[in-house]
Image 1: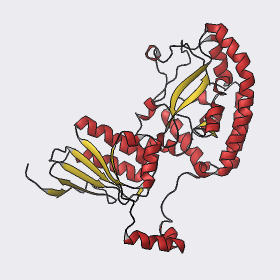
Image 2 (image 1 turned 30 degrees about the vertical axis):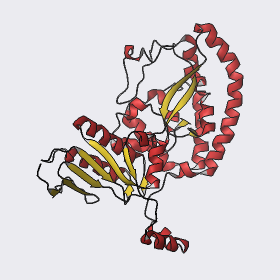
Image 3 (image 1 turned 135 degrees about the horizontal axis):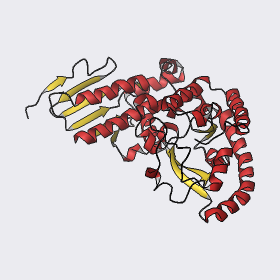
Amino acid sequence: MTSHNNRLPSSLSPASFEASVLESMGTIHLTQSFTVAEAESFRRSCQQAFEHPTVLKEVVLDFTQTRFIDSSGIGSLVICHKLCEAKGAKLRLINVPNQVMMALSLTELDKVFHIERLSTLPTEREQRQRGRLKRGRYQRALGNLPETHPSVRSKAKRALDIIGALMGLTLTAILWVVVGIIIKLDDGGPIFFAQTRCSFLGKRFKIWKFRSMVVDAEARKKEVVNKLEGPLFKNDNDHRITKIGKFLRRTSLDEFPQFWNVLKGDMSLVGTRPPTPDEIEKYEVSQWQRLNVKPGMTGEWQVNGRSKVTSFEDVIRLDLQYQRKWSLMYDIQLIFKTVMVLFSKNSGAM
């Protein structure tokens, strides 16, 4: 193939990106901040790159300038990776800095992508920047860069989670005796059920519940018609739910073992609904924003009638509403509202 170096058309390269094609390799230079707006433009860039006259065999993402990435940025990388696989092209990430590498490692995407890390040896320019950092100038220069959601950084929220989790686990230990005996008498299967869910940035973890379904429920999922829109799955007449399971779900007692997840730090007392990996596989870039905070045992979706929420767009709206309104006092308010809901007729499992 004749060697040529072309700039991608303006429709392919948003103002925040630089992209080019050399022979069968397309290179996209990522921006300093990689959040939802940039991630959506990047997704379009990846899609349109394969519409270029040159058949791409490799897509290279240059992270030299990138200093921040959120869940939307992670999501757009996952979408780009799937697109490259579908087109038979190799995806390679180069000059990946520590900040981005930490996010990729957290989500275990460092095991999926081909990654070349940015050299850790400081350049003369970086040494000068470090000197300015001591005087505060460099910090002001980076002042416009976004940070992780304040709820993720809050020590007060984490302290509330630990205290609440310890109290909750005490109750769970008492419930375990009674609930465990009833579950065993019901069908003789295991007391607990573990399922893979996704936390902050899409990090996977095992969520724990008192088992409310038959032992082979996961294998029989195809037998049940989904009554919800989008990636969510729910059917109020799910025949896989056991007799005791109906009671546990109606009272939310099945969720008490999740206090262990809160204590470990995979979840929070209050947050967004924890999605399954199957769900986030279907997400659009903007929907990944709900993973900018930790999932919670309760949240907006819980106190606003979770059994009545049938649209995934409503779930997204409630999750983003929580992120906008978050404060420690707001978390406490939602906890009290949750207790009130559990004793009302509107309680129901999601």
